Image (cartoon, rainbow, N blue to C red):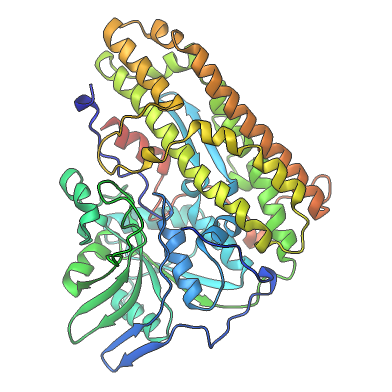
Length: 500
């Protein structure tokens, strides 16, 4: 059975360490020019020294890690854990339950471009996004940016500097550059499985984020810090051998960047952080936890199959019944049903693990981001979810770049047993019903997480002394659901990839 389920999972290495909380008032962050990384520069080359390396640790957080490297080099004391809080990804979630889609999405996979825009305005940063729509990946990304009114600059416009000119200008100014790249062309051996089982990016593919720290026009080399090495077996673990820092020739680098539509994220300091920093961020997190539908997807509030925030967990829990799972499986042919059941267990455990990683790290970091708010009751309520996450997650679920790592866990093991039963009996309802007791146990953990998020939202609202019925965040701080050049229609992508 294991050979039958050898799948290629290129699902998460995209735009996702152990760190300590910020010891400063995040609402009054200012750049210290003495802390900005020094630049070694000649007329034909520039290299930014001492850019802190951030390992993303878990598949899915490469853009957050790449951005953390950029910000720390600019003098901001913001770790990866701090970004889980500032972007709200640790306290956001969604469940999609309709027809042949039953998928839990951790916060990092829902609306990354909008998260980043919120974060940048919160901290007084300007993020300029560049794309080349002449490339397939860039064209899809441009469509998504336009669809959700996100500003971007078109590299195809002859009056715009070329991608390499933007790179040179940014690095020479002493600021690293976060870009999207096609992992198929990146040199680390960690990505060999992607080259063996995958293919270069297509329009609906998923790219990886890396940080550019230098260039040399004489040797034609680009200097890179890659947050994603060490994520997958057999190379899993923090890359303390330094292989995260490597060079690529201009030709090879151009191939990787071009395949990802030359997607570029240039960050500069613009203004001071917002004056009402703690209230703005706190209200945003309350709405994310509670699942305010306008905050998640303005204009799509009535889409009944989208369950945000706390209801993402309860919605998934309610669907773990014989009837709901059987209805889902009926969309597939008889020979595919057992495989789809296995995939359902695998992806659910994998994405819950991705969520759990950011969530528990963010709880360790949030007091440093909101130092003026008494968070004891909030953290106590939020901590109640941790043992239930632990019961449903497994780090091995996110350590394979190709194929399912079979594991004896509550969640995956239950669906594996259902799939095995169905494969041997052909009785769909009977196979699911044989394991209803364990499905109920899984549901109880999910309902407990939902209750914890609800209680945490209430506690944070009280701590912030917000009005009983706060208005959704508006203006340029509002958040809508949407894809990006890196997260292009993520639900559709996942479904298509799993079907293949």
